[in-house]
Amino acid sequence: MAEDYILAFDQGTTSARAIEFDRWGAPGMVAQYDLPQHYPDDGWVEHDPADIWRLTVKAGQDIIAARGRPAAIGITNQRETVILWDRTTGEPLHRAIVWQDRRTAATTADLRRDGAEAMVTSKTGLLLDPYFSATKIAWILDHIPGARDKAAAGQVLAGTVDSFLIWHLTGGTAHVTDATNAARTLLFDVDRQTWDEELCALFRVPMACLPNVQDCAACFGTTAAGIFGDPILIGGVAGDQHAAMVGQAAFAVGEVKSTYGTGCFALINTGTRRQESSHRLLSTIAYRLDGQPTYALEGSIFVAGAAIQWLRDNLHFFEDAKETARLAAASTEEGRVVFVPAFTGLGAPYWDPHARGAIFGLTRDTQPADITRAALEAVAFQTADLLRAMRADAGDITRIKVDGGMVANDWLCQRLADILDLEIDRPIVTETTAQGAAVLAGLTVGWYSSLDEAADARRTEAVFGPKMRAEDRTAASARWQDAVSRVLSGPR
Ligand SMILES: Nc1ncnc2c1ncn2[C@@H]1O[C@H](COP(=O)(O)OP(=O)(O)O)[C@@H](O)[C@H]1O
Ligand SMILES: O=P(O)(O)OC[C@H](O)CO
Image (tube, rainbow, N blue to C red):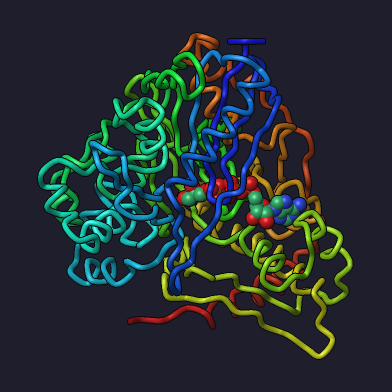
């Protein structure tokens, strides 16, 4: 079925995936390769750009070898992660510094102490936290000998993972990104829709390093001959959480999607006028089409599925994440064990990069099943913290659309419904991130005339409703709040 499918790349934190989507939004063949993680120091997380490139190309080649040439390519990616590379050779200056990395916590704390946060938040919708790209770019420029001189001479290009991939896919001809990825850097004015001189000066990032910013559905370039055979148009790009808004068809004001992968990211559509948060949520771009941004409020949790991976890889509680549903159901303790997985600090609404993880309530008979259950419950409690802030900012929420690797877990979906006290709507296609990238590319090549037309593809597979007694929910939430208060680092 050559040219009758869109090839969507989902370059996530833990894997490089390529997925085939047809016109009706149905996924076909999937090629996936795990991405090696590097943890060189406490709170540091890196990826090798050569791995990101090699595994992405390999995944794409697998699909194209089996299915022929696609009509277009869509790209979605882990956000905030930055790569700097040489304009002539394409050689990276350093490993990618990943969104979870906290090495620049002192820089953002200093800037906050200097009173910069109000200006930064009003322009970017973000907060001063090491999560975002700007301080990571400056760190590489400051720590690689000669990098600042090279950047001053115009020899260094910087970008998020989409930008790095597109530059290489187009044979070094297109240095571009999309508005949603740009909006995560701390360097992009989300009202004026441009890189901002004052922000670039504050974070010491030369503007000349930054890519051109385009709509999410646009011509980003064509692949260089040879990588995937004949050239293919790259027609859609969005950060993964934004692509998931598209895949989940969360187009109406007030619609919420929450994605459960390595981390958890909940976004509520706030329409074409940007709304600022009064409760430490981020104000970001959901997607931008024809120059018009649609905005969202976002709550970001750094550790969701990553806690499951930690139980699997470090504590060897199980071999496959799938086993967690059975283990959690087998746990007989009633929520006495509370696990705060603040491995790399806490995100929204706490924003504490110095917090670290802890498990409370252990007794002589605590079993792996109890700790596994607590790891899944932590995902629900953290989402509850986000939704509390979201409701305070944006009004009532009665249903959320969920997706991501973790929502295959029925126990977790039921727990989410119980703790959040609302309906959890799980779609048939849970690869909504890649689906969103395919939809954006489909808009560019004329498969769809509007987002709404593409949205017809979304179908609900299951709805989980709350079953927990209100007093049990209140007691469980109080245990969680108490545990969180114990891991917060306090004023520094
Ligand atoms: N059945 C499951 N129950 C709980 N967690 C799961 C399950 N399946 C996968 N996960 C977790 O989900 C994450 C993978 O989800 P995915 O959406 O692929 O992540 P990412 O895009 O961040 O790489 C992993 O952290 C894994 O531990
Ligand atoms: O790769 P994921 O799916 O964990 O998403 C990472 C986020 O984009 C980080 O902000």
